[in-house]
Image: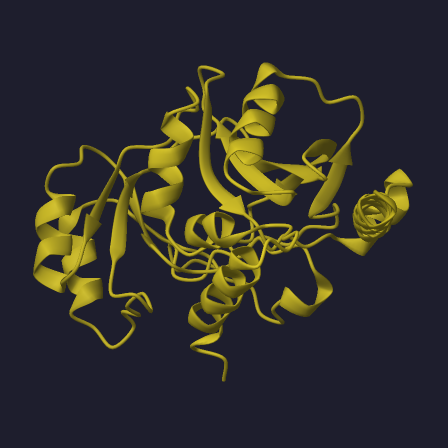
Length: 262
């Protein structure tokens, strides 16, 4: 019921920024949040590798774009959330049958992406969380149940989703696990990227292929946290955000007081 919330938010952010107000995750951050095309172009400027991706604006162009890919590929919405619309295909014939069926769900902005499938040695992706532009923690997400990867309780679906239409395997292991002591040069690149693009709070996701190469595929500037994973690790994203925003507020108040005294 909130189809036009992003458009309204863009206008509000422009109004706030025009009046010099402090905005965490500003208009540029929102632009990146609602367009994976924009995300990938911005990430590439920082030497951050993204999967080969082609954008299509009709069913026919989507099928034509897929013909340029070798091997398996996925579709995803240019503007989406929590992995909805992500499907894996073995070839063009399967995609063509899907887009002509009632099951095909177009992206809200009319742009669907064809993206090369990154084969990982193990079924998980990694999500790097930042608060206040600083690294908070890294969480490993089990993908064996599909691509709906939003960590918040409110996002969890009752039935399993598998992108290839098969039954999801039963698992007792936690789906979200915070990694202790994660260290990799990609964290510094992510930090530079978010600092230059008006982002203070974000979760950035990558997948590692069989050769150990990292492929970044999503930037979430409205990130969520998994309470079970945080409880097990003794880390708390919302508390970190509260501290960060409190510090920002006190900094602004000090600046205003100093200006008045001057």
